[in-house]
Image 1: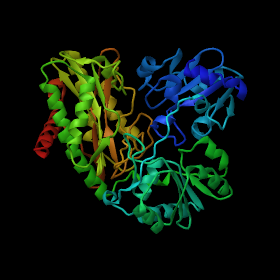
Image 2: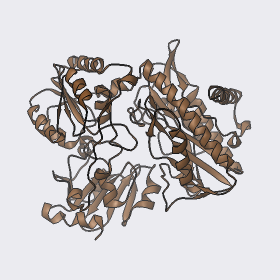
Image 3: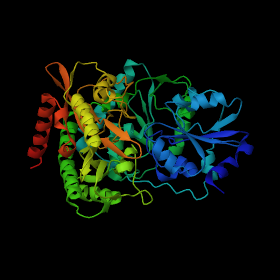
Image 4: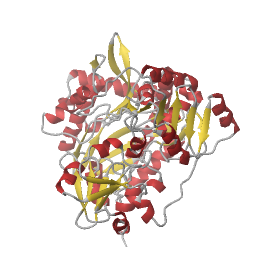
Length: 547
């Protein structure tokens, strides 16, 4: 029996006609650990954003955004109708199906998502995927370790800054449901994930400065003493619900990343701009120095990788590139792990925005074509993310033309000077200007926030998108990554990380990434004098710093 059919076999018992399965778990993060990868179990979809709707009778549906449409059509194991949410979303579909009872697990859906839907939604505390999953992998727990050496600010100082924000909002407690925020606040890290150095946990900070941490991870005597000094009490994760119940009559501050289950328990909660997200997005001097150091190491590793690719005289594969990317990064001090699964997409695979090569899709790389490599590293002092598109043999005139349009957009953002209060949407326009002039565009944002030995996709996740209300401030680290994708043929993306700095009352970007751009893909006749000068300075800077 198919996995989706095993789940549907439970519908009669719970008196539902359909069931929602999101890509998120109880922590609502971008990525899930193997035992919580319920969407993949039910559908075969392996990437990080989607919702499946299983129907007792009739067609099953899968909803995702433009980044994952091609991947969804490739990966889904059953006969799903794949829908691009920009043209047909879940809310519209639920309105169209009338009075069907649609079940969902309130622990793994955000309150924002559920409150935006219409129809007969039936919360079911048990997760039906878990009930159907006969050989569900066991959860693994990593040990907690300190990261205060690289944090640039003591945990007690961070806690006091959060307490001040709590006092301004006159709240009794602050609920921290995002593990990245807990790890940032307490200057701790772990290895529960392959690509993000965190532990799965949550916390409640009280007005008196005491903090309850809910975690089943191990820790040593030194960590125990550290927690004691910070007035931190550690409880099993299963105690979290009890503590929520005890706080239901208190004034509790919560951020936007809140599960529907928590919202039901804390109906009087005060929704605020998440305190930790707000504070951790602005990097201190030690974190910025760490980012600079990490990018020097990463620049060496990626430059070696690109040289290795260019030096190949015979055939090699996308998975060979993935292996080499890891090998060269492992040669650098303080490297811990990749910051996400490496993307190495040759020709048509490069047009799949978040493509992950695997044995059944692994292409031979041979002349002629273009190769898109998007990769990153987690170093103790910082997190990196870089995309380079390189020519394999002789690129076509069309590929050179479109690469140059993307490059012009990247340069436009990189050299921008803008006033305080500028939103990401205003900068996003600069990146798309030259593509849009020719009726072209790309289906992802231009930039996302990046953490410090934390998530490679940190808040503001929508740092630069068409509709971004995020205001860029000095100290933020963001990507700048315009692209162009021709389905079935090739993909182009150029991505640098940069931090925002203040210069004479205005803001501008300082590029962190130190890997030259492939000039064999550039039509210099399409560049202005200023753009040529910027590119020349950037290439020279990379070469000087990396000597």
